[in-house]
Length: 489
Image (tube, rainbow, N blue to C red):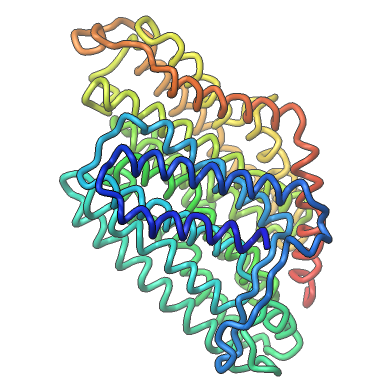
C-alpha cells in the first residue's frame, strides 16, 4: 500500500497540475502534494521491515509475464526518503522563481517525482524500465522549455545519451526475460538466472546494463552531457537531476546489475573501477578551473558519484553500506549548494566567481549556512558525508575483488584533497574578501530560504553525529546484495 501511494500521489498531483491556469496556485498545490508524499515516506519508515504495507503485487501485463510489483527494502526506503524530502525543499527554496506557464512546470516536476519513486520501488524489470523512462521524459521538457539560451543543444545531447543507454538496457532486459525459466520479469526470476547464464553471456550483458547506468550517474567518458544540462536547466530541475536522478544509475547497478550478473561484475570490475578513478581525478581538476558556479558543482558531483560507484565494485559490506548512506547524503548536500547558487544568481544576476566577492559582509546568514553545507561536501568530520566517505574508503581499501585496492584508495584520496581545494577556493572567492560594485547591493536571504537551508544543515549534523538509524535500515539489503555479488567468486 505505501509504495503504491508514494507513486500515485505525485502522479495524480502532476496530472491534476496541468489543469491549473495560475502559477501561484500550481506552486501551492505542488508543495502540498510533495509534503503529502513526504508524510507517506515517513509512515513507511515507522512500520516494521516485515510489514505487508511495504509491498504490493498485482496483475499488470499477464501476457508478457510482468506484474505491478513494488516494494520498500532498506535501500528503497533511503532513496524514497531522499526523493520525498528533496521536492518540498526544492519548491520552498525556489518559491520566488517565476516560470512562463508555471502550472505546466510544476506538473512536470511532480511527474518526474512519480517516475523516480517508481524506479526505486520497482520489483519487476519491465516496470523498472517503464518508470526509468517516466522519470526522464518530464526532464526533457523542463530543460527544453524553461532552460537557458543553449537549452536546445544541451537537451538534445541529454536525450541522445539517455536514449542510447535506455535502448541498450531494454535489450539486456528482454534477453534476460527470454531466458528466465518462468518467462517472468520478476526480480526474483532475474536473480535466479545466476544459475543459468554462462560467463560468456554475462560479459557482454554487463556492458548493456552498465553503459545505461554509467550515463545516468555519469561516469567518465559518458559524462559530457552533464555539465551542459546542469548549466542550462532551470535550477529547480538541476536540483532534481544532481540530487536525485543520478542515484538512478547507482541504484541500477546495485539492484539490477551486480546481483544478476555477478560473473560479469567481477570480470569487468577493475575496468569499471578504473573509469571511476579517471573520472574522479579529471572532474576534480576541471572543477578547479571553473569560474561558473553551476559548472563547478556539476563537475564536483561527477567526482563524488565516481567514488560511490568505485565502492560498489569493491564488493564489501562496508563499501556497499557507505554507498547507500552516501546516496542520501550527497543528494541533501548537493541540493543545498544548488539552492545557494540559485539565491546568488537571482540577486546578483551572475554565477561567475570572478564577478563576486565579499558576500559574507552583506549576507552573513547565507554565508554561515553555505560554509556548513560546503564543508559537509568535502566530508568534514561530524558532518553526514564523513560517515559515508569513511565507509566508502574502508570498503575500497579492504576489497578482495581486486588486486589494485591500495592504488584505487590512494587515487580516490587525491580526488578528495582536490575537492577541498575547489570548494574552499569557491567559498573564499564568493563570500570573503572585499565587496565590489555588484556585491555591495547584496541583501541577506529571506525566511523561506533560511528555513530550507537550516533544515539541510540540521540533517547534515544529525546524520554526521548519529548515523546508526540509517546504517541499521540498510544492513539487511547490504547483506543480501553482497551475498548475491559473491555468488560465483
